Image (tube, rainbow, N blue to C red; front, top):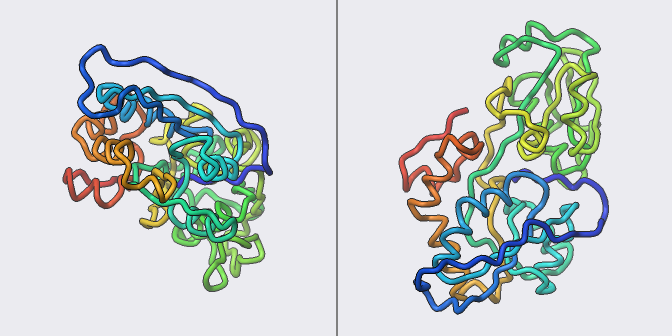
Length: 291
């Protein structure tokens, strides 16, 4: 997921509400049922808008969106029935959040996900080996300051050979203290995830979450290196567990598994084709991820 716990509970606002219906006859028993999707800042609202909403409308549904400014309220709103679906998190986060808050929410299906990437305006490196040659002791690297994404960033930097870390990282308590060795003498500077793109004007490199890179107009293809997500950090669609067998949930899953959804993801009109595809998608469509 591209999860950023960027701040405490903030107010939510309804955005980009669509109540249009398709003039053709519904292909299910939707009967103009309204589905409210909860989304966070970034590309996943667009993924729903372009790759899911049109097919839901053909089935007779109305689609609305509620955008949240943090990554706590979407699950609380889902549990409380304020929204029907949310699209912003991965299964590792969902499981931990539900355990901590005693919520009964479930995964419907995993979706293509924007990965972390290393970006820079200060170096000319096109890949990690070139970057290692350009890095100097004291160069600053900004990473997200929330524990979940900080842990991801440290693991990413470790996998690239830029640091080593002390054993396994607890994603709920991760900090710079988890760094064991720092052979390149990098200054690791945690900042709020949403601010990472802005730091590119003043730091050597930044580990930016994919959704915030897109929001800042940074093409994902310009990353010096991209994270390879493990399956439980690929984003998903979530609903209340009691709704899993309802028709609207079955219809959403059917659409995500459809050729229409695939065609939107692979279209050169959107950034989605730069996302990491979940395992089921790779197997079903025989389209490999490019790292």
